[in-house]
Length: 316
Image (cartoon, rainbow, N blue to C red; front, side, top):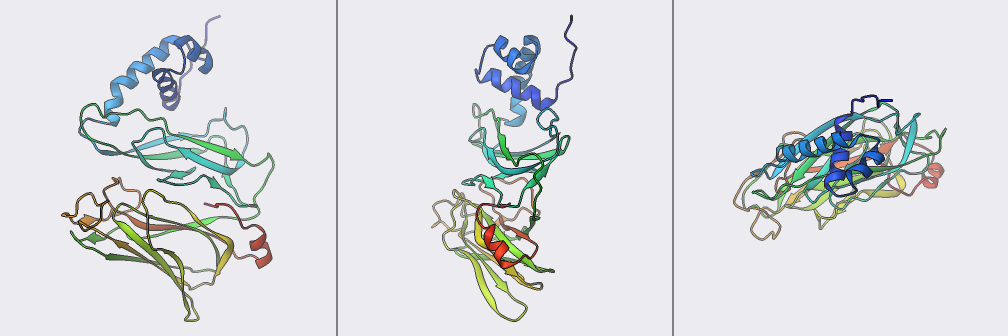
């Protein structure tokens, strides 16, 4: 009986071709592993080899690629909730990853949800990936990439008790003068409703040296709630409250970031140029470009004993 011809998704073809080009097995072994005939595997290998330069051209240093797909019903047969996830870069050219399932920046740890929290995932759910690459330019510098994401699911039937919310506090239209030693950039956000702060994820690039966030409360008090005096681009992480911090409605958060665009900064790619912001969040960015924002996660107010009981892991 002849095998019925099936239309394979582009992501599946790329996965099989990369496995073949990486030497993970013979054509026969890979054909059996992925349930395909050896002939299309050879075709996919050739197509990937010929079109790889479209991803990393000889003269390109950075590139943003958008991928759209869906959660396969072969992978997930019913709605579930994610307990933990991790994005694993597939090459040294991966600068960062933004997706509807999770993300990645240098030094980021796996995302483990607190007790009572989770992210819903359903069969057929659309998935959007933004792959941001940065590499050395020039002939012979092309790279293959097979970035992947791993997920740990809650048991079947599990339901979350609490809802995670998020906002991005940042400035995207700044200009850092050439040679500036301690240049300050600011942004602010005001909470319209009571909230329980859960975590912060501050982000800058190679010129970023310090970041601070101050809360200005409705009663007139103010408090520094985040301060990173020695920011390191190569060690970015999520800062988590062990016990949630209550923020009353009307609280204004002011974010301040400082940048060293001078020749005294050993990580500065070029102290002779003015550095502009990305204009908007999600714009294609190189490592030598600059950003300034903090991702804040929070939830609805809850009794103090409950907030204390569920304190612990990451919660994005």
